[in-house]
Amino acid sequence: MSLPKRILKETERLMADSPPGISAAPKDDNLRHFDVTVAGPESSPYEGGVFKLELFLPEEYPMNPPKVRFLTKIYHPNIDKLGRICLDILKDKWSPALQIRTVLLSIQALLGAPNPDDPLANDVAQNWKEDEKGAIAQAKEWTRVYAH
Amino acid sequence: MAKVPRSFRLLSELEHGEKGIGDGSCSYGLKDSDDIAMYEWNGTVLGPPHSAYENRIFSLSIYCGDKYPDAPPLVKFESRINLPCVNQQGLVDFARVASISQWKREFTLETVLVELRRDMASPANRKTAQPAEGTEFPPLDLAALAKQRKV
Image (cartoon, one colour):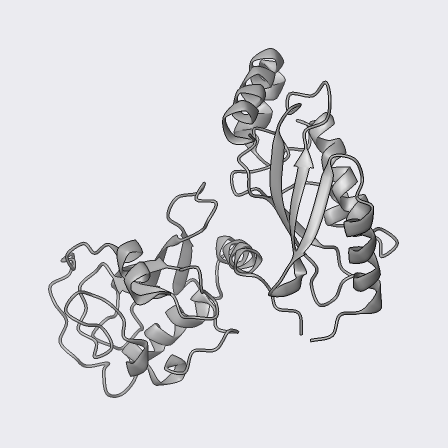
């Protein structure tokens, strides 16, 4: 199974020069399926945590966005219990000019800027709006328990 | 063709299932909505009209092992049923459902449920007397069975 040149290039660059706090490597048995880690951004509730994700480049990539989900449990209003992520560039705001690198940077940025007004995990978002302090404490606790 | 990994395949099946399939004669979903590995599923099949299964809702347990969708899921009827492809424990023997006996990666949980329903409606099976409604097969540890069968 030959990979499009674009995917080869992106993979090469990711492996050689990944953005700070981010790693991504294709699996041996499927070069479109990546093991990803993202470090929680500084001064966010996720600081100090390392989160595992998986990313898949569908046949239609880059015309269609990559598919990404968290494998590490995380308390975040835009990430649900199955690790699915609510992020516009993974859906209707996708553009073929974006890359794996930009997607992972956006996900890292999402950790630094939870958006409870556009929730995927409704219970988390509600808690975030009603008791932000409590929600942040919960996010820190989950980071400590699950993301180390 | 790009080979869709198990996890993303199951996520898209989940989304499809949540929207409801076709005429509502079959449905499925995750047993535990925060099972990140997505092993255990519930399914239902509505007995086809003009058959001995009519007006019954059959509950099933489905186990998607690590090899799914390269290997078929384990499927067990919870509701008792008399159907040649279902053994005394309630387990479905895929070899006895002609349309899915040769498992293909493209087959989905929907395919399995739709084909089981079609099997109920087949001329050979549709008049088979059925057990009393509301009775169940004994419980079975599908996770252990999956491990044993290496699926």
